[in-house]
Amino acid sequence: MAQSLLRSRELSILAVLLLVIAAATIKNPSFLLSSSGWRDLLLTPSMLILLAVGQAAVIITRNVDLSVGSVLGLTAYLTGRLFIDHPGIPVVVVFAAGLLVGAVLGLVNGLLVALGRVPALVITLGTLYIYRGLVLSWAGSSRINASDLPAGFLALGTQQILTIPVLFLIAVVVLSAVGYYLYTARSGREFYAIGSDPDAAVLYGLNVRRRVIGAFLLSGALAGLAGVVFAARYGSVSSDAGTGIELQAVAAAVIGGVAIFGGSGTVWGAAIGAVLLVTINRALPMLGIPDFWQQALVGALILSAIVLDRVLSARQSRRLVEARDQS
Image 1 (cartoon, rainbow, N blue to C red):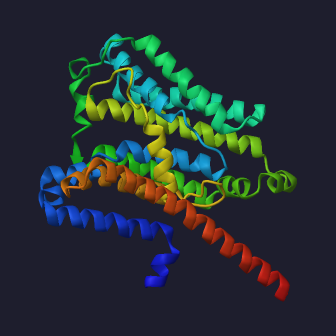
Image 2: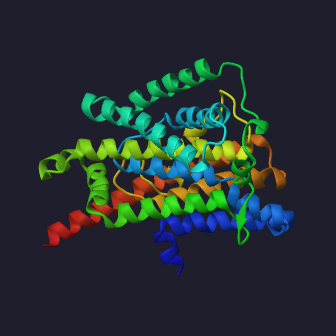
């Protein structure tokens, strides 16, 4: 059992998550056992799960999307403006608009990376500032307040089904759909082939550009959806919404076992990594750990995940060489 746990990155991260929850609950039972504690445990990471799932798909193709925080901010403010400028607009239409705008922004990233053959780190760092600039010029110093949003939309931020928050259920549905696609669909498996060896994927005849564009489009769409979720969760949106969250999305994916060099990992692991990050931020202050050590622990988790990935990759390479020599 222990060996199986160590072999599975997802189970290992889940074990760490459960330990953090257990330690915080022992210290303060209300962390989990109160009604708000259980709700916050599931509700708070919902937005980061959406970003981590999209980020995982991009990283698997050996790229990265640093613009998701700005996309989230833009669609969150768009959500508020739609309700203000078009009273009575259906909530479903607002969710669709967030997805569509996010997908368009993600498509721009994908086209620049795939067709321009410029490193994704450079492209998305540039669009991070461009998209944030759009939000700043549009919103200025104005703010969307809860009073500007309809009660039915705000209710999504607290509504539950069988004690499970609706926003968390939305994140789980998205996670399940993307996870099923990457695991079962041929085009989804091609994401891994491209990330493992892009040159070999081209020689094999895979449409690398199309898959890379698709990964960025997915990441942008989920960031757009996260922007709508942000507005529903907090009820207040300003021009700095989502600032810095792109690094949390990357960290969640890496901690969850998605190889930063591409080709391996799962969106399930990325989602667990997102929950772990959010839970650590909530639990460690309760355990009396200073802010510095909270940040240091997150950094240590990221470094450990990268080192473990390189160790496992080197071990796998040695096994393949030994198998080839024996044959």
